[in-house]
Image (cartoon, rainbow, N blue to C red; front, side, top):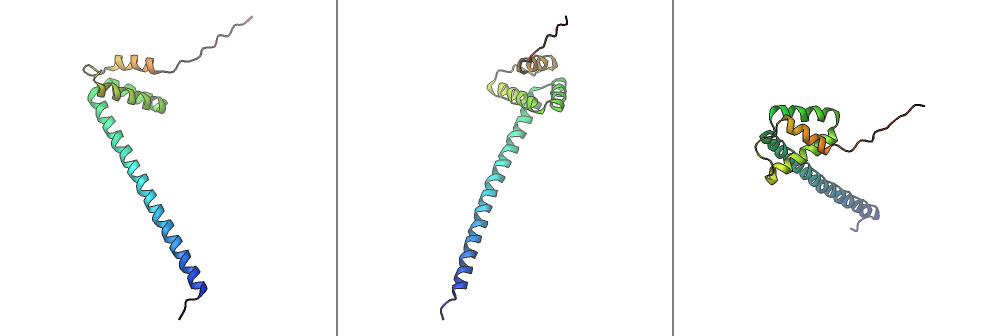
Length: 116
């Protein structure tokens, strides 16, 4: 008994569909692994920040994070890299954090308005 051409076509479609599902499962695993690696990196960064920031500095950084999350992320990365490279002596207090925020803050343009 030979197979029907419709059966052959149906089998081809099934194989393609199965291959697509396997490809998607592989891609999902990669995305999941990337997300897990990102979470581990964030947890490590938070541990470094807890170790090197005083309570006042951490509160100031949290306040900045509420208003400017991208800028706070940049500051956190900078503090973590300073700490990991060994350029932080002791802990960073609130005043040092304030100075660091001023240094990292992008230049703001000022407008002078003169009335005649």
